[in-house]
Length: 265
Image 1 (cartoon, helix red, strand yellow):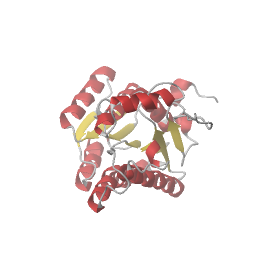
Image 2 (tube, rainbow, N blue to C red; image 1 turned 120 degrees about the horizontal axis):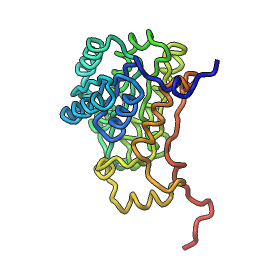
Image 3 (cartoon, rainbow, N blue to C red; image 1 turned 90 degrees about the horizontal axis):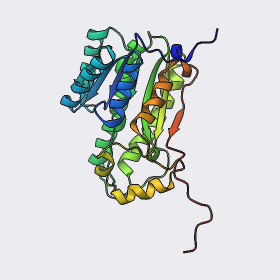
Image 4 (cartoon, helix red, strand yellow; image 1 turned 90 degrees about the vertical axis):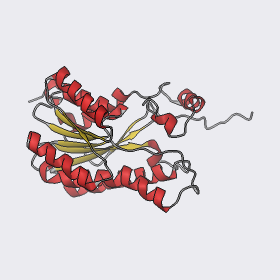
């Protein structure tokens, strides 16, 4: 029997953990999934922001949300997020490993500690959150885990050596988890292009002029919006994607196109 679109995107009774949930993408994904019926647990270092967003989701949707101050590089705090989720909701249906950040760092401009710190934030934190959630995920129908990857993590990116290396590791980790965990839990990644996420892009080392230059070359002619990413996340967690695992879904407006016949000027 064919299911309706509403049935496939019905998240009532689902409990979804989202890291980096106070940022532009994480907060939008939390709001959207809450509007689809999910109980969302938002983790972020920004305690004020994440609790405010959780309260707003509860008021707007009637679906209870929980906001927690969590440092994704601290395993004990990740354990606390799992414990509080189980105490509050009794289960975990899905995880979105969305936390991550990296500034412009030239290829030979890093050092051991900076590389390790980037790995801890962008890769190891996602591993630990997923590992600790797995005993609960395997009990759920259509359980799924998502990873927020980046275009710099699957293309040569010597300008962001710390961030790009950590994100590349994240992609292969997702693939490995997928083949080891099917059919119990699905694992997928998003390859996220340039998104309008407030000041984060500027903090990463871009100038407004750099951003304008990139946007001019994007096939669909604009930067992504947080809701563009949230829509893709909801799809990959939904029943509509129940036969999809181990993939990278690229959400980048068609990417940056450069002619194969460059100008001689």
